[in-house]
Length: 197
Image 1 (cartoon, rainbow, N blue to C red):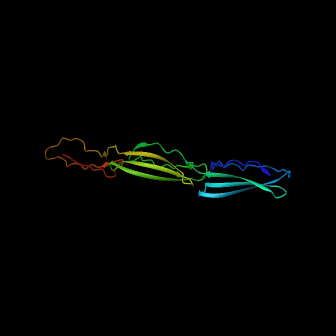
Image 2 (tube, rainbow, N blue to C red):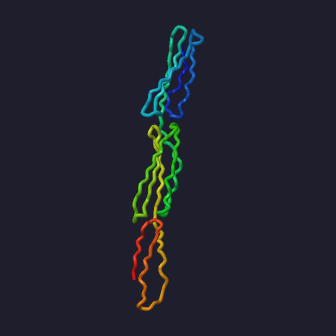
Image 3 (tube, one colour):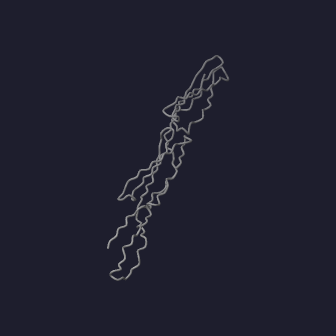
């Protein structure tokens, strides 16, 4: 009894598992020996890493048998693919953009998880700082990929003072008291107003 050779042992990515081959057999007396096929899956460290053991057995009419085996090692070593992160930008302190929502695709995992983290690094004043935003995609086998956006925040807009009184010429006994001016600012809720005479 002779069974035509099985496919060689292979290691493949989880999205490239080959279909089972169809083996045939010949026999010196039986014109049509029966070929059966069996596949056993042995799980690995994650759902997309496992081993398939495929066995073909040929049996003739007198119960003589022969078998051949193929072992397929399936692995998931491809990182998920994140959508594009926004470009690095420099903005005024009152124009910091909201964080974008990134998505991810993967060759084997239908729903890789995307996490987001933001780190603030303070600068020379309260309204000057850097935001480092990082998105990380992780698939079911812990393969990851990340993208980062750096936002440089600055405060370069001067506060706006309310109007000062007009210039006047007065008698020495009619000098008006100093006016109280107020100020507004695009980022600072309470800019300090100082007075000098």
